[in-house]
Image (cartoon, rainbow, N blue to C red; front, side, top):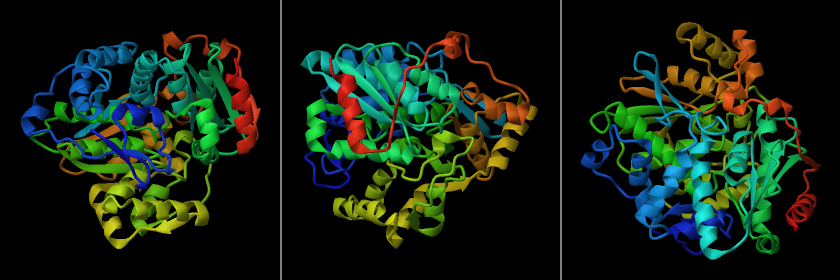
Length: 462
């Protein structure tokens, strides 16, 4: 299995090389040269298996010779040992034909744990073999940062540096990143929004002298390993609801497009997925793109679902690569237009292919609050605002197939929004007791590439 760049000008890499590299040197994202297919019998055999076994079967064809079967099984077992629910990603029925997949039972209470805990194990195993030291820099709109810190804190050959938009995430999200005491953890509060943080991260990868100096690696969803780990729970959910003998639809609250792109990979592997429904808040560039054929930034507006307050959806580049027939030059031109002009028109053929693969919808702030209130009143389930966006959009896209909405975070990560909608303040799980009492460590930095690079050099110097 080889991995190629969406912009067509970087060398192909093995799984391990692509995982450790993150962003390709031509600015593109690595994607598998081919997507392995499962037959109906192989998929049907996954029904009822433990999550770790499904993870092994789904991901094994993608990793090549990076790890032996025994090594990979052991790394998967370690990755998910700290999850609080034995099913890892349990389904809960919300109504007739509508199910909620709870993805918040990991160490940091968000779906990012499924990928980051595994990435942490894979990185550690690879670096122990090579003896190398790397600097992981990540940008977060709230959940990626805490999941990365949890996965890499205390490791001897890794520094982890997380950039987050100052005062644009919840207090729980911030404290999860600023309270770890390990010396290899560094949290930077950046003036601006998430798109500013993400742009700075990409600029660091494209500054090859800095990239090589600090041995830069990335764990944002630009990293193929992140997407791959998220493919697994589409298989566990769909097979538990009757796949491959019937299709299952999924509604995915998404800002950076990685989580729903994982569903598209699962579908291309042969999983019986009908519709993949993009659910957005008022920062609805993905919804507007499908509706109009124009992909154009319009500024980021803070919302009660801050992890989706994004206008530059990095993983959408992977979908465009497929929609444009894997034409790296065409994708590179579109990305240049996005950076230079703030947007681009999607060709007629490409937008048709995107509309064939995805549906979309949006939820306003009032609709999000009302969904939190109503679902709790009707079912007793407390939804975080991101999951509520997903449920609202799912309800507008119900058909004959079972619908699964991805619940991406625990409601206790956003207690103010949940309390405002329901009068109930969701408590943190017992294992996170004391979060509000721990001292914080954080460095304020202006949105300036040179300033950020200088701080990172200072933090990782030992």
